[in-house]
Image: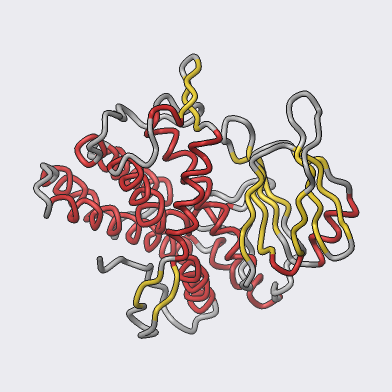
Length: 335
């Protein structure tokens, strides 16, 4: 079974027969023992350090259908190497473009993305409300914003509602998280505290996961509906990630901090910024892999599927909507 490999150290990667040879290199340029990874067992690579590689390697990776996602020292997502889309179809490309160009069709899809995201945020709040957390007023405020989603007439208006919902939702984190960490306001570039650092890191992981799943469908990842398509940006992954961030990223953060699996020593504090140390990244990634491999009973399929596969199923639902086969409804958690 193929799996994701995470490269935390900088190093050099090359092809060695039908394997990937990775040689870690420290800050002094000293090489460590090479690691060999069979190509047939790799689904994608996440690089958190500098990767020295040549075009021959990327040709090898491309033929094997392996994506490579790059992050800088501050955990900012920098970009992805994506293999040639092997499932792209002309009819889907045309219809996806038509749905973007049509204000009505684009708004209909974007509305569903926000509706699904807001529902899943409230589901998280309800879990803690049922455990005697004082979050009823937060939920009520979000519910009032949710009523505005269906009546929105423009993407900008919809994005404004989404921003208001998230601002209120993030205000609940200090009540949910029982450790000594506090969030204050949401800050991104750079994150100013531990909770913001975890949110930024987790959101990037979710984005990259969604991008990898889109690749295995006929969807074009550069044509989006909620987020504005941009030059060299896979904005459809941002759209789909909205639905799954509350379920995958936020729930994982609550668990890691409330169970004290990630601690103060796992963060690096600099002037007005906070990032995860290698120890923190490794703990998060290990827990992330467990989370996306976790299975749930799919309400329609009546069988267990992993969260990772659930994202691909979400892409298939969007495909059916675009092709006029079935109206798109976002995944809404039942638990």
